[in-house]
Length: 122
Length: 108
Image 1 (tube, one colour):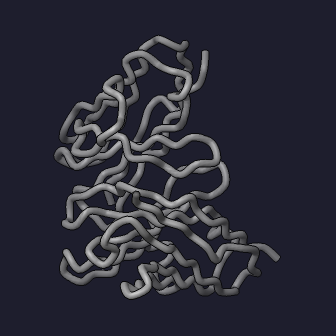
Image 2: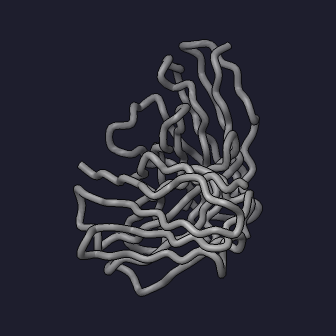
Image 3: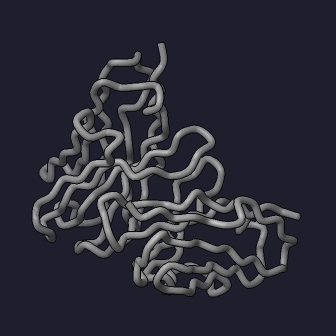
C-alpha cells in the first residue's frame, strides 16, 4: 500500500525558514517523480514543485511564486522527499501535500499524503 | 500557463440525482486531464485520468468525458459519500501543473 507521510510544518515568522519532509513507503520511491502541492485555508490547489525520478530525465520545476525561495530534493536511500522553504511570506500559509507521479511527462498525481500545515505569521 | 476554469462553483444536488461538472482549459490539453475528489480535512484523491479513465476502485457512477478544451465529470447517481469538492487538473503542458478552482457538490 502506497503511503506518504508529511512532517515539518508549523508556525514560522515572515522571512523565516522551514523544511518539510515526506516519508514514502509501499512503492519503489526512487523510480517516481514527486511533487509538492499546497492549499491555502479555504482555497483551491496550487502546484508548488516537482522533482524527477530515476524513470525520467533529471529535472526540478518550481512555480513562479516560490522560485528562488523553495528547493525540492529527495534522498532515495531514505525514501524521503523534502521541501526547503526560505524567505517565507504570509501568502505561503497553506497545507502542503506531497504527491506521487507516474514516470513520464504526461501523468497525473496518483497518490497524496495527508498534508502538513505551514503558518507564516508574526 | 494554461488556465483551468471549473463551473459551477457550487452544485446543489439531491441524493440519487445526476451531477454534471464542467472544466474548461484556456488552450488544448488533449486528453491529459485528471479529476480529483477532496472531502473536508482530507487529501485529494485521483478519480479519473486521461480525461475518461477511472482509477481502479472508483465506482462506475463516476465518468469523465471530453478532449481539447472542454471536459465533463458526471456522477450518475449521487451517494452520500460523493458530496465533496472536485478539481480538474491538466498535465499536458507544464510546468506549471494547473488546477481548476474546484466545484463543491453539496446536498440539496
